[in-house]
Image (tube, rainbow, N blue to C red; front, top):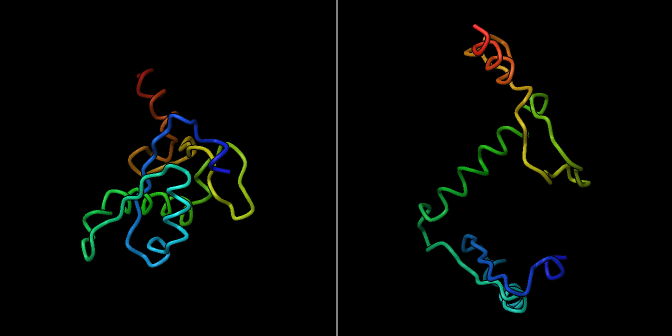
Length: 111
């Protein structure tokens, strides 16, 4: 599927850790065949993946621990994966006095 969606002028980079599956010859040849440059974090250096791990950590928090407050736009696949950005229109909190961010903004503009 990826090969049909990448424009000919694309030069993507795929970053991963040093897991055995990413070092496998089949994987490296597949990436090379798609003109995808492989990037791997250095051995025993968790800092290389820190930013990515942080983003996915927050996504997992929101997706799995508080699914009732998320409004997903788009279609989910069989595994329930996210296909479109998340919207937090229904998220409430103590600082917002139980209102959604949109409601709270509207209230502060009218006061």
